[in-house]
Amino acid sequence: MKPEQRRQEILQEINAITRMERGKLCPQSRGPGHPPFHKLQCWHQGRNQTRYVPAEEVASVREALAGHERFQQLAREFVDLTVAQTRASDAERKKNFKKSKPSVTRKPKPS
Image: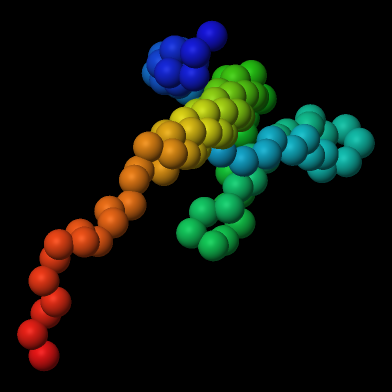
């Protein structure tokens, strides 16, 4: 598959991601006899933010976290392909670049 085709596929996959959430979902417990709960932690504006997630939302948050992880993977692959394409293009351009040689018949500049 050509890099440009893969780049287009990546963009389509990214466009198909409809749910994202940043952070890490951590199960917590208040001790024996209490129901477990989850908290979602992430860094935002230089600070650790915590959000408590009700049990009925845990599956949805996990799906959103997986969406964000998939987005990150696709973005890294897209960048890698684009960098490789840029470098190949630059190398080809340098190969075809010819330095201009000074003309033998050029008159010297007056001092």
